[in-house]
Image (cartoon, rainbow over all chains, first blue to last red; front, top):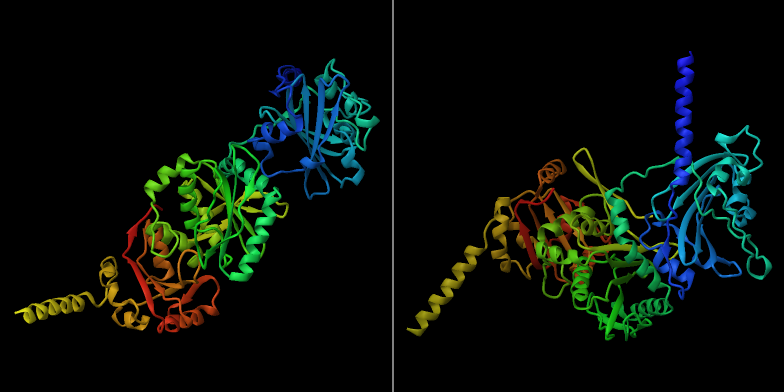
Length: 431
Length: 144
């Protein structure tokens, strides 16, 4: 019996020491921001790029809140993340200390729905009321924690008489001597209190993420291109071009296009006028020295074609600033072909050169074309799924993306399964 | 003498044309079919079907879009056989027929969706349409 107690004691002591160790050894993960840079702009355009944890999340940058201390040495930024669940609050917090940026993703999952006021609370205030789960992920990618909370107390501390999470041994252990950061909000306090992002994270259960699936890898590769497509679509030139093309289609019933580009590297985006491209296809004249994108409609409401892919590769090889091709349909659907890996073009073009019939757009070579058309004319897929599948399977270096209800472009993917011997295709789109 | 030369040339051309127009009774012939497609261009589909001695099992169709004109794909395997071949990494033999874009073709495709699969008997609804081009392939190995 004594032996059993001894083993239990050793086990619990081990756990305790491990918990302390995970706190004390956590490095202050951070990136450096130039002193003259706009913090929010830097975070949005540089810092969060390529962060897997944020893939597919509807980050509401326009609702970001920024807080500075009197010396401007510490800046805190909170950014909400949109979701449709009533019991989930997600937000990003960024702390900039002497130009060092550290970002964190918080997720609060309540057993009961949150009220609208809860969305204005700080992280610790949310936790004080919470019965559910809280998870905390360092955007630098190496630490993530998840803890259960009942009535504002961590489950492993219930019965110890704590008066809330900020006083709890768990938080104190990690905050150590570092006091909660309270920086006066602009104008003496805005609608929301400043965040209380601890500089050292809460210890707890370490969740080791599983290795990314091939689909997650594809999503990751397509994230930057999708973001570019989204960013350009928010330029005022974009809706004007789209409407102009659809108006022209209403008049001539054919394809119409617009080119986007700039007159200097990374200069402001300009657009050509609407160009009539003929009944089925044609080339868009893009006169800008630095062409970045183009847009055309498909009169038959079909998604981007193999021809769009091949001609895009060819155009990018001439102008490496060109990386997005939008296709608009009369029903309002907008697709974007985006470049994920221009280095893959050469292999793809060498292995699968286009087949070209006079008077028509280039197409996949015969064997690939048969595989492509089988997906939607013999099996259960759609043309959209077929193109997404082919681009991924043959590593074309181009992704098919589609604008979602929030105006964000998301990569489309297609899963091939079998039912008996019959092939069955289903959507496997990036979130 | 000149007359004889011209007559001989014409006879040679006629012989070549007659020989090119062959009966198609095996899928192995599909790869060679393109040599004789000139004979069928501009003619109604039924003209080609007369020479096709293989049973059609199903027909895929695609309406005119950016990738090509209104077209049908003749398939010669039932689904079980087709799936077996695909599982073996073989793209089953098929014949794709493009039609000229005229009033008759537009009418035949009007009631169809953008693309789909039809019963073999549906071939009759296309038999009067004029052939623009024929692409055919015997069974060929592809990646699985």
